[in-house]
Image (cartoon, rainbow, N blue to C red; front, side, top):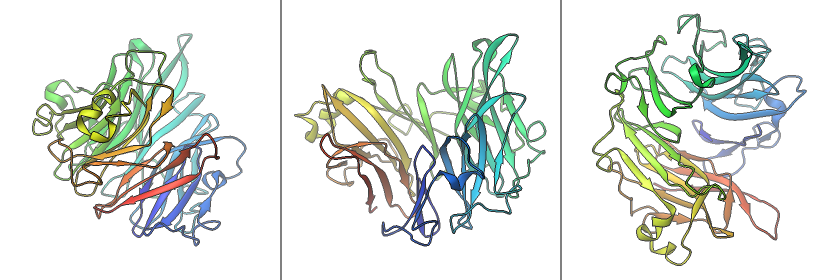
Length: 379
């Protein structure tokens, strides 16, 4: 989910896109009555499209990144909902092979202060007879041409090392132009940083170059230069979807944890302890998390949405907001917590510049078919 100048864009993981006006109504001027299917992302579609990332330019054009069958792709959509012919050759960049690998995909896309486009991704290949997965960052000019001044001829490539696999995702660009990504490999998940020219910063996180962030899956920037990360640990019981804890991490542009955020830079949200935080959970006693999402509002307040389960049943979606010191913002909804009327599957969150929060998803009801829903919160 992303915000344009006067509209909200919603995407599904399968590549569909719709646009809403800020009052929540479908924008019928966009595509086919406010909705576009996966065909819009790539010309002459012949395979499945997976589009997990989107970014909105200042002129209202949308950049969509993901995979088209076994190939990574990056497309730009006009404000009217069509492929932008001024981007690359036909509005989309699709790679038959990338860095010599036969299969690949993009995981995130961001736009820097100069309008250049950065993407993270991964590719699968074979090295010395074994399968490996390598992570990469690429930077493009606004025209869609590869920016060869970044990294090595426009790209940064990380090999899998001893583990044989490495992933990049959670791309963020700091106020100083640094590129921060989440790196996941056999050693765990961590944040690493690159200079604006694409060089790895060895002094990031106190000269370690790596800030360990176990199970982090999202990165976002907060006004003032702070960066926050979010993720959910898998828990200890393998028979459950996840009985672990959600975590919010806060650190600065140098990779140093923010001690002013929950004392040590980490805020834990364990389902079994939610009744101690919110009285409304006293009877249901949630046991774990089966879906989650995270966003930062325009004023820098982190917001977490959790889809919880209890025993054999599911809880309604729980959305909660936190202050800049990591404490619960009790001014949000009812004593800091909003609970939807139904359980929700798939719930992207987006914090808008004016402080408004938007969340969307499909209601999960055993009797009725899934129905899309969008919630919009005032500041």
